[in-house]
Image (cartoon, rainbow, N blue to C red; front, side, top):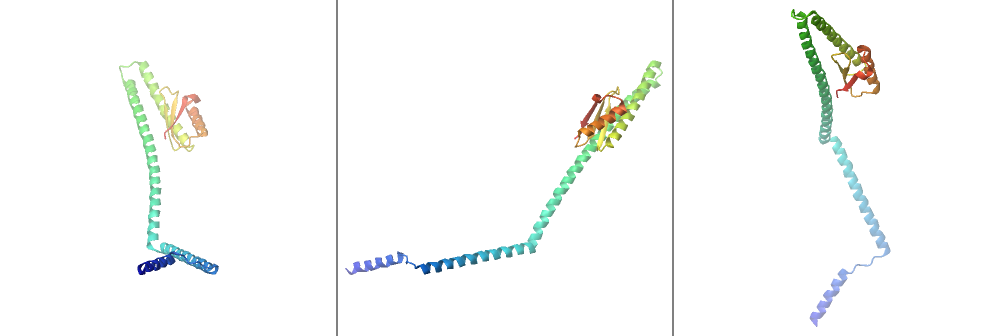
Length: 209
């Protein structure tokens, strides 16, 4: 019996521990007020830490280092763009220079052969005259090409190469211009027609880039 009484007392104690005390309305209000104050204090503390951290960031060497790295990166990107543009211009200039050399080489070879005919004592007078006329025609073609190129570039085109065919009836005009508008095309054709005396249909405009 004594053992049972002790067990009952122990169980009663455990029940009392598990049972939550019933709070009055006034006690509930006080607890809510206390929780609100604790939350407000935590918010102010976090806000203060954030402001202090931002101030430290702005006034420390870390900020300076990060900003410097960002600035250097932007500078490098700008330089890369400039280099790409410069490289593109260099390629275009190299293309036109190479094309002019090839054109001149072909003309020089033709002129050399024709001059040999003119100077040859074995050729007939008719062959001499034909060769001389051909030399004059090539000279006129070279002069006309130079005029077309000069006038076209005067219209704002970066570079230009005119290649007139052997009969001086057709011409290809190669231009370095990103914005090849209808107005520029018409101007190029008008220049070419006026210099060569061909029709508009015989002028072919080619954009190099």
